[in-house]
Amino acid sequence: MTTNITFRFASPSDTDLILEFIRELAEYENLASEVVATSEILKEWLFVKEKAEVIIGEVDGIPAGFALFFHNFSTFLGRAGIYLEDLYIRKDHRGSGLGKAFMRKLAGIAVERGCGRFEWSCLDWNRKSIDFYLSLGARPMSDWTIYRLEGDTLSALAGSN
Image (cartoon, rainbow, N blue to C red; front, side, top):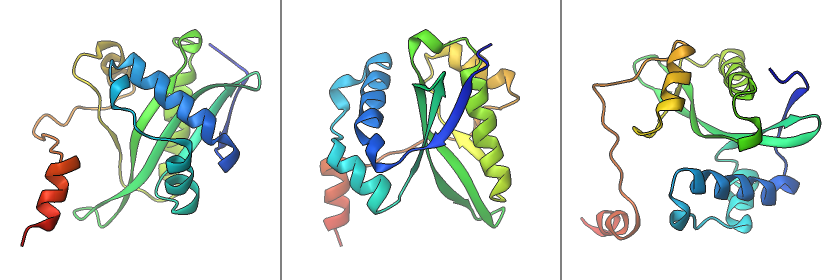
């Protein structure tokens, strides 16, 4: 277990580091060709438009991982939740307790903000992560399927009447 873990909210000066983490995550997920984000895009959406938040996890003062999250809303609960878009820990720090520390930090933010839920998605093949999430007491939402519109399909629907 790593003991010198600290967390901090990212600032605009962390934009290149965030992009580096995103690219490393994409490599890990075999999705590197899908990353089109740039530092400029991230800076605009994270720090100008403030559409998501990023926490940097450091071990002995060195960035070791990140979590990107945003608020969603539950109509049934009548309040916001936190949706974890990405959690990534560099290979050298996996298995050190940093992942659990991140999840505790995010759960604490959710509770502190009065959120009703803390949710995320996980790739079906990522058994290590699935087992980790189950060990935390998380449960899969087996009755739900995620749907997505993007690119030309999204534009086509937006343009239809």
